Length: 92
View 1 (cartoon, helix red, strand yellow):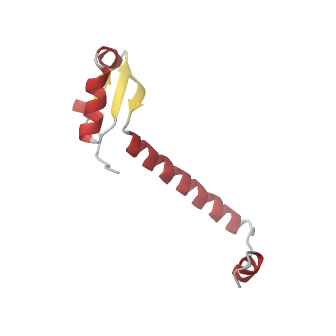
View 2 (cartoon, one colour):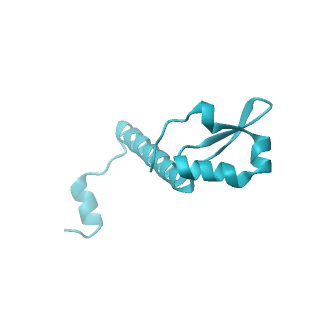
View 3 (cartoon, one colour):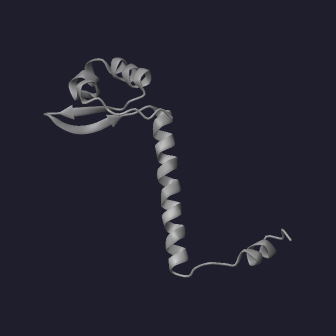
C-alpha cells in the first residue's frame, strides 16, 4: 500500500470535473497513489481512492478494532488460560 500525503493543491477536485472526465480523476489516483477529494460548492463531499489502498486501510481498521476489543476483554477479565485453549482445540 502506498501511503502518500494528500497534496491539496493537486488532490482537491470539483465534483463537476469528475462528472466531465471521470477517467482523468481515476488515472490521477492510480498514478499518484493518493486519494482525491471531490468538492461541491467548496465543501468536501466524497473521496476517490484506489482499491488496493481502500482495502488495506479497511483491513488496518478492522485489525485495530479487534485489538481494542481484545484489550477490553482483558481489562474486563474475559480471558481463558492458554493451556485450556490448547486442550479445548485438541492441540495437546
